[in-house]
Image (cartoon, rainbow, N blue to C red; front, side, top):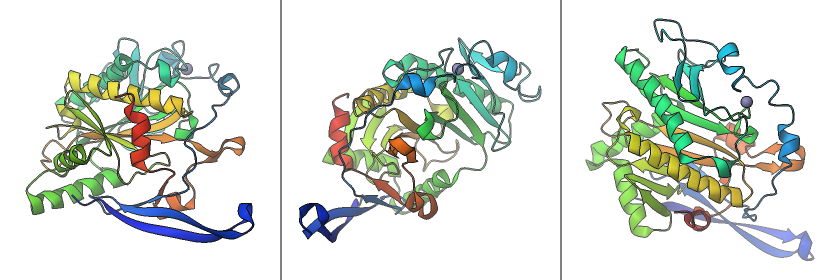
Length: 340
Ligand SMILES: [Zn+2]
């Protein structure tokens, strides 16, 4: 396992210090699996001021399609050949087709009746139940032998900086035979890795990270939590892998609760940093992919300049696919580790 770092340095004349020579270090890291590079730079203090939530949320409940008085009236239903009941429920959570689908099957699952839930009040059980509802839908698709029942992916865009247009907590529940770019690239690279090394990449990654401990956060059941060496996000990413699991369909009820528990621990840590937006996605193989290992990634999102709503993705990320992380993942790890 090679964690490659290319050390760089920018030299400039510093206006804050009489134009004296200033050297600013940064690094380019290569992802050990895909070789994709990530820049570690800027090194600003990883602390943000939270906005006035009353102002942010004002009026959003009046039109919210996921609030309990509207969810069964305004959300679509599946056609009978997919789901005769139209929608799927689990206690107070509801799953239905996305009104703006991006494939043959895109579903959305609400996480209960509450319109806004601060990150610190999100309970592991609530998240686990949301995941259970998604699994119930995926297992149903598999049972009816739907051709899109290949990759079973759950994403969570929490609060607007994550790309979410609706405050009400909900999951994107996506079954597809066409894996999205990064998943496809990872699976191909892991297949090549297995052909060469005769081992599973993520199993080797976990072994290597537990040995060095710089990015290891902890274990919950058979989930292992790690800070990502070459992250996609501006405040680093955290990955959780599930030992022995290839596809989402193999996750047990305990695994779902363990994943939900780890996520809420991270939310508590991010909240202390003033972070209140994140993306989360499952990365899973097809059921026959021995080279795959189920993992999820949570990536906190921020505004570079909150006063004018500047997002944390600019040309470098958007058009070059190059990520910028504003702190060393190993340092961010120390802040998060308090919760594990
Ligand atoms: Zn709502």
